[in-house]
Length: 390
Ligand code: SF4
Image 1 (cartoon, protein in one colour):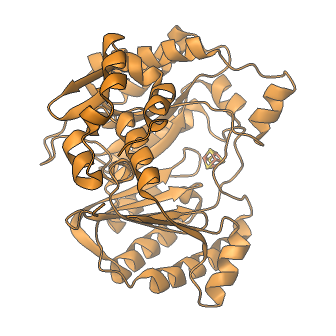
Image 2 (tube, helix red, strand yellow):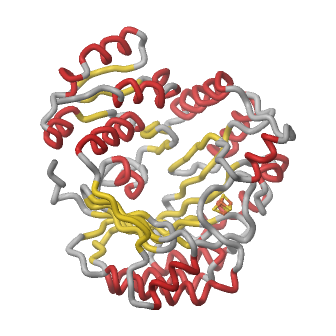
């Protein structure tokens, strides 16, 4: 197991505030916006405490929560402080997540001036009834306005988040949402399945029988529609939930450089409540509660809740799960470099069986799931991770 010293790192900053909690949300965020200024002071101190690293960063991602509930000036200060405390390369990808209904044209202009070069907009749906059901604060028109304003102030790299698998969402309704999204010509689309996380209001509504989520087979069809439809329109499906248009940039794609780090075991540092960091083979994560996070920082301590060194077996398991999420699949040469295991030999029988069923394909040192296999990703990955390797 050798970390790749050449890999540039990613810096993630978690802004733990939202105007209102959505029905399905399991991310850590609170709605008490009165705490924003003390949080920002703590974040600044956390950057100083965490700054002692040799890592070089080529991405900065400000996520949440809803970073755009902060004043644009606060975002400017965060980016400037990150640049002072960490070695962020010129030309780094700098992303901010924004939610419609929390940004105005002037905010977006200010983000650009602060160095943000990628926007991820939490549209979720272009239907007002869906947005209401999800408990979002915005309307379809708010979403359209945010995207238009972003273009108006010059953003060239815009990603939209959409959710599928809503109650009573048939294929044509979902396709209409995809259509509307594509008409806005985003560079990137993330299509997430609505999932019922335990303890969320959505979970309670489902348990009480007031909301019925679609059956697995229907979800599989919606997923297939997404891949086929976006593929025809020039969006390359590069990870289970993510699609990017081709670009004339050096890397020829609008893929999210930052998110790719999570799937390729690149090092990353996460700041803010609940944020995770990884430097092979060690992972650690911060306290979730804002109060606890701020208390540690006031005592000049890094707000780390727990640290774990992944065992070789855990790393193999993650390499399989994360590899199968991407369209390139598992890079068998890289797998051998990291674990001294010949992937194709070690899993020969399982690979052959899934190949026969058209769920998996092997070529050019990569073992990847076919679109039909991606629908069954969890079950297929489990067949691999349940086996012992040498
Ligand atoms: S805006 Fe996003 S982070 Fe905030 S509550 Fe809704 S889903 Fe969760």
